[in-house]
Image (cartoon, rainbow, N blue to C red):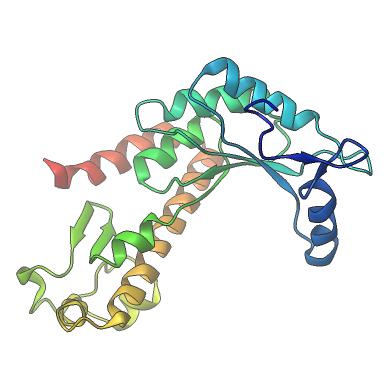
Length: 225
């Protein structure tokens, strides 16, 4: 069994048991589609082959997967290249989902190379350690300068946390080791990410994606200077 199919166990009819058949039953119950994950190596030939072979799989009804996930061995310096290889091979009419991508730079790179949707634990993971996403980059809310800062995390954000709590209160929660601190910061970071993707979608529809990318990343990286 080669690297592109090592996680698939074939049934008697040649379809991948535990993926196509079982998930088709789930699809009928939940209304959700069945997606395949491309998680091969960094080699161009292996990635492209994995995409072609997954796209060629047909279930008992003769249908292919409803979408594809792209993950495994993705680093910043090769993210766009690998996503491009995969999207060149995968059917354009089906969604391409990025696994483990959430930083603004990575989202922009993935989108311009053909990715459609994203998921990642990072917004909640960093929130548990007091890291907050705002347009000007990331900062830690548990530092001393926020102890008496009675403004919201971001006054342009419409999330529950920004509408109801101040930076000072979040600072207090982290110092008191209250689990609510992580919950409230996660709510904000998740909303920040969703708003960014909504804005990217609007920029694509409006024909100003390149300008929006340049402006957004210049602001995001300004805190690092």
